[in-house]
Length: 64
Image (tube, rainbow, N blue to C red; front, side):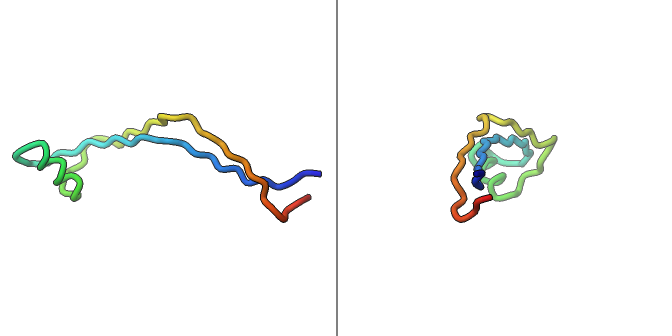
């Protein structure tokens, strides 16, 4: 008899973006970008840094 399972897949991704902003120092530049005041240049780079992990659990109350 088959049973119904719920499977959770978790993937870790890293997104990298580059910004331009006028500032007097590095700390101020970071703060301005965090506040959304920077101009994004180039494209967004996404990398999968960890393979997917899976976790299956029985979905109670559902049977075929």
